[in-house]
Figure (cartoon, rainbow, N blue to C red):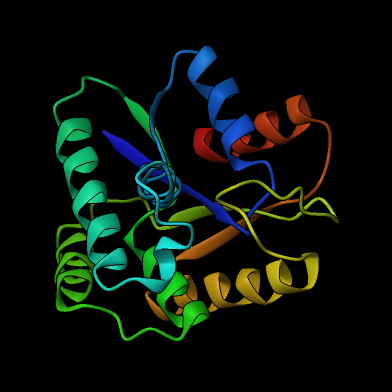
Length: 179
């Protein structure tokens, strides 16, 4: 099985691309951070990223999803972010990464869980705020740079997917994985 990561700044269109890839029959694994934020906000915590254990909660959910995904019979899977994105989030929030995060990163690198080509979905030139996405466009650019740095530090090659109509972006991703 080949597992590819889609990453990039918030609001770049990763989830839409993931939905199209899923509709085309590819296996997909959802982003964990957005779901952790949504659950915490539903429980009355307005800014869960400011609470202890936030990153551990993301890592736990990512591990659960990765374990379930490993049981699938997909030839190709696309993952909406990875634990390396959680490391980028820690750096962005200036929070020390928990030991659990380093442990999982070490494991996925050692086991070569993901393909070394990571699809870096470039921003669309704006960010639409949501309950979980409270970031300005300028902040998203900083966050994007941190993601790029983290993936490069860990030996990944970034395949930039520039802003374009969704079918064109998906076609570029599929051309790259066919090589």
